Amino acid sequence: GQQLNQSPQSMFIQEGEDVSMNCTSSSIFNTWLWYKQDPGEGPVLLIALYKAGELTSNGRLTAQFGITRKDSFLNISASIPSDVGIYFCAGGEYGNKLVFGAGTILRVKS
Amino acid sequence: GAVVSQHPSRVICKSGTSVKIECRSLDFQATTMFWYRQFPKQSLMLMATSNEGSKATYEQGVEKDKFLINHASLTLSTLTVTSAHPEDSSFYICSAPRPGQGHGYTFGSGTRLTVV
Image (spheres, rainbow over the protein chains, first blue to last red):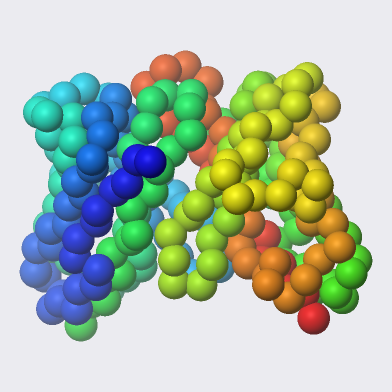
């Protein structure tokens, strides 16, 4: 079945540092999504990507849809304490089910 | 816009009882609803896909008689965990495609189920 490999599993960084995480897939996806989840809450969409090669920013967040359609990365610039949480990548086709990565736990030292 | 309201947010039930979780699309019509389960420190795993007016599609290994899904209207999908056991304790989350391609998916806030 479809699998996503998300790395790193966790990060403990200093406030102000930049963060980078990525996902690779064994299958081609037409959609890549990045979500953040706080404890006890549902995932919240950060960035959605629908076109191979697409580079999209949302404030301090930047994500790219890999040209092969099998990978995506998320960068967070100048991290702040409220960036703490679990970040998930997800791939799929619009309207169809999503496959989620295992998540990246982000901790920020202030 | 495109909000999914999920209730209850937390529920504790006794083994052997049934629990119903509701997801309502508040400002759009959700013809499809995805139901995920998330165990502690793990990712979201799709359980089933419900489509309004038809039978749900279950993922491999998910018991359809145990996890009853109903999608009787365009704004309401329900998941009923029947004869709950402690191993069913988990975080259950629903999700629907946002209307209009290119707008991703919207998630409910999740239901923390604890079976004692």
